[in-house]
Image 1 (cartoon, rainbow, N blue to C red):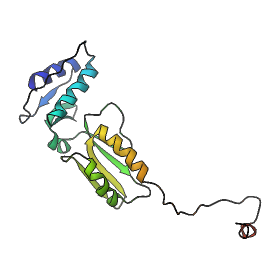
Image 2: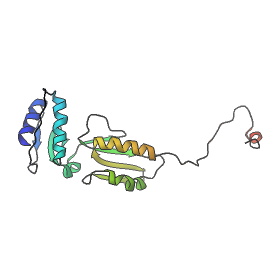
Image 3: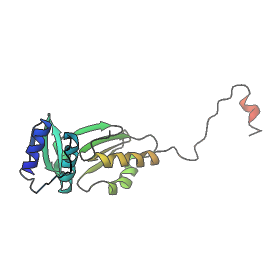
Length: 171
């Protein structure tokens, strides 16, 4: 991991620090020369396969065990997670409109990596989820499907050219 991390740091012109607990062999091969961003995505995928990830703290990239990533910093987003950061740990805040945050925690917890977290903030009816960005995008779609108004909700129809009392018997 150390040698490939040094090569990635040189290719990206960024400092990458490897936690001493990070051990293993990473091999990235390609039939063609890879642009730095594509090599970076391959590097992140290889680290993820070994149980490690990269977090960014104060402009520095750190390779850490996945289980510690949520404590090391990293991106925090409100709303949807953008594309392009699939193998990075991100913390997302999701505000719910209709569904209870506490009830969604039980539904979503099995869909989140065991070393990552989900919590409900009942006061603001929000979820805070720390997981890989690609999984957060999938969870966004699930949450959007579940966070819908109840089916029996009354529908308000403004009446412009009639009296509401006159329309009641017809309805």
